[in-house]
Length: 74
View 1: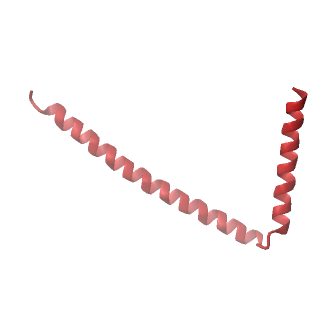
View 2 (view 1 turned 90 degrees about the vertical axis):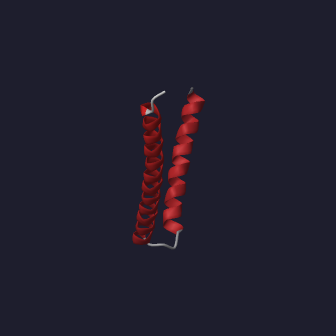
View 3 (view 1 turned 30 degrees about the vertical axis):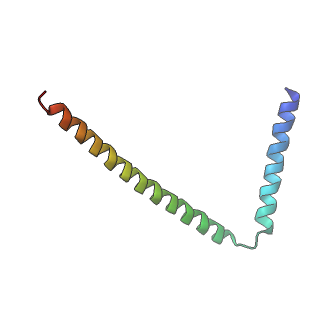
């Protein structure tokens, strides 16, 4: 158990140090990083909305077809 805690702690410290080094050494300003993150987020959300709308249309068409078949006399 002690080895697992040590490993997790080392991983957390290493990740934090790595992230700090990247932030200090990257030749990009804070505003540029934030702008890139926001535009990436907005693009991802737009793609998700489009995929959601497409899937919803497919499911509604499938439901309409099932309801149509159900109402047919046998």
